[in-house]
Length: 142
Figure 1: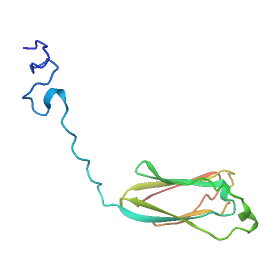
Figure 2 (figure 1 turned 90 degrees about the horizontal axis):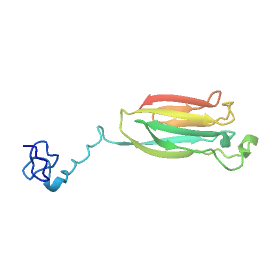
Figure 3 (figure 1 turned 135 degrees about the horizontal axis):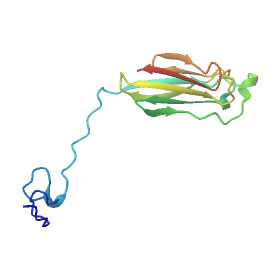
Figure 4 (figure 1 turned 180 degrees about the vertical axis):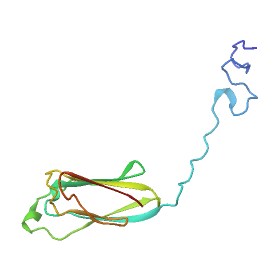
């Protein structure tokens, strides 16, 4: 026993034999089982954001289950909103999530004063904003 000959299937040989359960033929591993379905069915949610007076300063990342599921970048157009020239507009985003998942919204203000007037609403949260400073975080369960 344990001679080490290839294909012998003996204990300690390091090779898979023909009759060993789960080893497959010629050392080919058995196929993987199908992935598990989500623990909860997915539901579709809408998130609404408003740009505020200084949209080029504002961005956010929305984390759920340890992954970023939605993200924004600062507006790259003119900051004409600060002079009252910006129309009152909103941006809507859609996301599918499992109810009961833990989420965290990270909001950023690159200028650092938190007074942009931008807001984030959705998933039971209303008008979240950076109140002061350069970052605000809000955790909640969907």
